Amino acid sequence: MLEREGFLAEGKTASTTTRFPNEIRTFFEDRGSILWITFFGERLGWGFLDALPAQPSDDGRGVWRLVSGGGKHTDINGDALTKERLTGSLTKLAAYRGTSCSVDEDELLVDLVFASCGRRRLGVVGKTQKRSISI
Image (tube, rainbow, N blue to C red; front, side):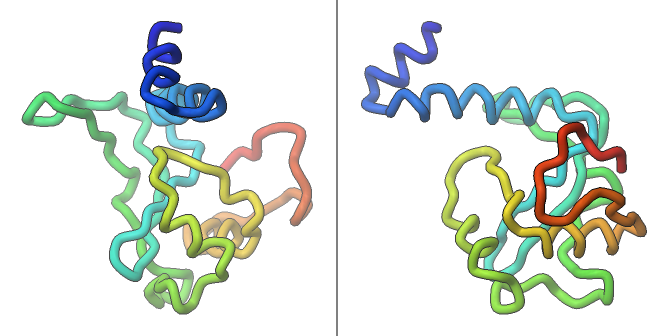
């Protein structure tokens, strides 16, 4: 709870003080089942983390994780995933400055990424699943 008190003292909201540790926990606990995305310039990159644990950075000021098979930045046809080709609900995530957030509302992205990995969705599209989907 000491971290929460420190965040509150810095003027962070109560919801932010809960979100920060949850985002960090997700990063460290993921063993390759979570789709991670990032924006760099005008392009979207995506991938699944390698199951290996986080490694300390060379300068000792952070950690890093490998992306299984390397990061991807194209769709199933090999076309670059640029902001101009993506929906607004997805591109607005480029402004998000946290560690992780949900992209559940963008079913197109999920289908696009799974298809380009050679995987196929078996569940219902557009509804919350009660349990995890194996990939």
